[in-house]
Figure 1 (spheres, one colour):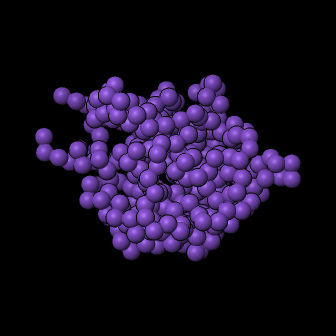
Figure 2: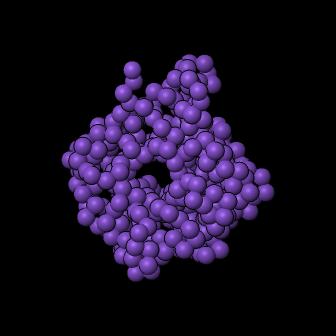
Length: 309
């Protein structure tokens, strides 16, 4: 009898909502995934609730971008409006989470504000993250998930939320997020490819030790993180296992766009059994210690888990 079992409530569905479109926009690099309109987003959310999925995490694609990512904390920004829609449609039935970063909103595609020399300004970025967290909380976010990997981001966000009365709103920290080749398709989905350089300056080197990942996790917990994440998932199962063995908070893992795209592409070519590959990868992530798994297959898998056997 299997002793590692997934449950629909373990799964979180990433969703993209794009401003200024009247039909969902299909993504060539992620078959089956779309950039949603506000209307189609609600339909997808209802389907996730009906399947028993535990949560949604929302990414926004604004119509206009600038150097400071102004749309990210604009009360009339696409994520804030979509959150309000979701609260009205499925509030109380599923956990509403928000990605908290700037790369989708900046015209340069980096996760923070830039200095005149074109380098990411960590401390100035923290003030932006704090403002975004409060805007998302006011719009109805039930969990904020900062993915920008700035030093001190969890503490800045926690302080800002507490100051505005959101003392019970959890922060899911992207504590071990690696500078990975597996993010490629996501950059089509979120329209956030850097216009110059890369993100190795503020994401972790894949070749660094597990001990370094554990130090990053410990720093985030000390700043007030309520849960921690490892991203990507499959190439970092050793990190995931070490984190799960070390902490006493929920541990999440993100099965990222490249992991999804590889399976879909190989299955479409007839090289692998798609359903078995999906189940095997998710089981491995869960077995390695993930309490929460972010996956683009969340609804499909949840439906399969709920089906009579």
